[in-house]
Image (tube, rainbow over all chains, first blue to last red):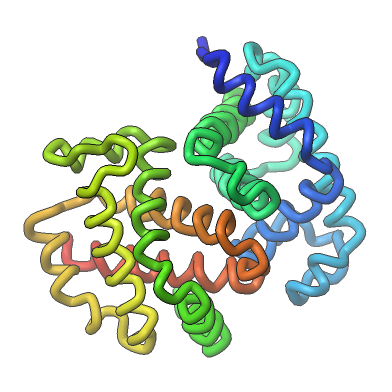
Length: 147
Length: 142
């Protein structure tokens, strides 16, 4: 059973309230594909991923990034039940999408960096620690139904 | 993994822009690592890890100096960090997984202080560079 302090919940919700989910999601996914190019293996049908510029401008990347981060928003509304929130998505990522859970960890770390670039000095060490905890737990929840 | 000419150029330019702040960045990266990954504190039972610790600042300086040295000798990181590599293998024996954690925190520090510097391309190059440094430091472990 995950325990969140009041401070952690505050650090998550106050930051999340200021996040542009579409922009942030698009940027996080784009950076994942740029910084860890092997992750492109899941997106053969996304069209042009041939350069950072192409990836950043790719409308399918943007759309999918928005979808992914929107789902993150659901987790934030249900911090005390991440397992339940991600149960079906976990099955989907295992059975249909065949995504190695390591990729969830990679995306989580990238998201933290994207948040850092947006929030700069507001992204204090305590803030980062809380968000690293969150992305770690989301990755864990998404991997939970794998078999 | 191999650093391309573009990677090397990105890394050198990045450290050029970071300049004298590298020492602060090193200290802050450590502070963030201890906060986000408390298990890393196990390597520093002899340190005061409280806020503003002089020991953490001092150690951050050392870490930053090594990164700067590696960036300045980016064509031969193994040569530049050979002594540090020996030290980590024979004495410090920091588990390899921890270099990734420190690397993540270093990138976050750059992102916080200099977001414009961390374009996706530079992010990729720096990440590769930090991986390469970690690989060198653990290369003689066994």
